[in-house]
Image 1 (cartoon, rainbow, N blue to C red):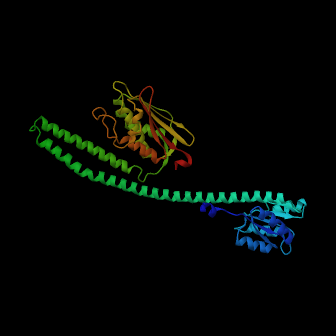
Image 2 (image 1 turned 90 degrees about the vertical axis):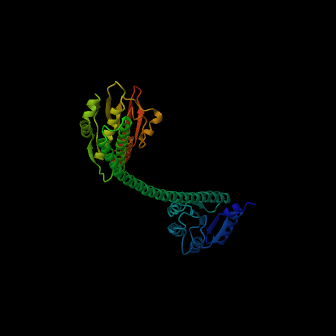
Image 3 (image 1 turned 60 degrees about the horizontal axis):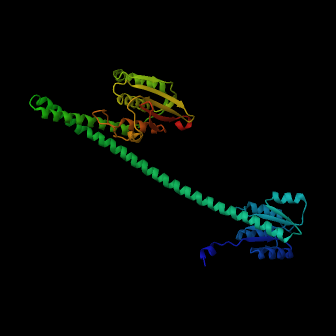
Length: 392
C-alpha cells in the first residue's frame, strides 16, 4: 500500500444550503453516492460559519431562504478572502432570466433550476469542482515557482555582492602591487644605467650584452606595470557625456599622425554618431584599435584602415577594419585576455594589454567586442555601444 497516495488523497466537500430538509436529503444522497463529503445546512448564516471553519470545494445554494437570501450569502462569500474563489452553484425554483442574471452577478458560477435532475446536478458539480481544484493546484504551483524565483534571486544577489567585493579586492590588489613594483624597478633601472656609465669600455662583449638585456627587461617590466595600473584604474570616477565620435576620432588620428605617416597608412573615417560615452576611455579604445592596425601590418603592404558605425536600433555597432596579418578564428577570443600575445616579440612587440583595455572599456559602456578575419586579408574589430535608456 502506498501511504503517500493516501496522505495526498483529497475527498471533495460540498456544502448544500436549503431551508427545506427534504431538498437537503435528496441532494445529499445524490452527491454522497458520487463520493463527495456532504455538509447540509438549513440557512445562510450557518452556511457562512461552516464554510469559514472548513473551506469546501463547492457550495450548492438555494435563493429563497428566511433571514438571509442566497444572493446575500453569495456576496458575503465573495467578500471573504478565504472563500472568494469557492465556486457557488445556485439551485432554485426561480426560473426567470432576471433571477439567473442576478445570481451570476452576485458571484455564482452556474445555475440549476428546480425541479432538478440528478444527472445534471452531478455533471455540473463535478465540472466546477474539477475547475476549482485545478485552479488551486495552479495557484500552489505559481506560489512554489515564485518562492523558487525569489530564493534564486536572493542567491544571485548574494553571489553578485560577493563577486563585486572580490573584484574590488582584486582591483585594489592589482593597483597596490603594480604601484609597489615601480620603486624596485626604478632602482634596478637606475643602477643598470650607473653600471653602463661607470664601466663603459671596461666590459667585454658579453658583459655589455648582459647589461643591455637587463635594461630591456626592466623597461619592458615598467611598461607592463604601467599597463596593469592603467587597466585597474579604467572607469574610476568616469562620467558619461554626449560625445561626437567624429571629432573624437579626428583628435586620436591627429595625436597618432607621426605613427600613421611613418607606416604610410591610409585611414578612412565614415560618418560616426554622437553618443553618451565615457570620453577619455572611448578615446583610448580607438587609439588602441588603430595602433593595433598599424602595428600588425603585412610586410611591404601599406596599411589601410577603415572606421565606420551602423545604427542597429538599440545599439550602434562600430568597426575598425584593416588589411594586416589578420587573426585566426582559434585566437579571436584569446586576444582580449590581458598579457596574452600571439606573436614573437622580435616580430611584433607588444605587452598584451591594449586589447584587454578595449574589452574593459566596451563592457563599461554595456556593449561587447569581437574580431573577425577578413576574406581579403586583415581583421575587423567590432564593438557595440547601447543607445537610449540602456546607454545610462
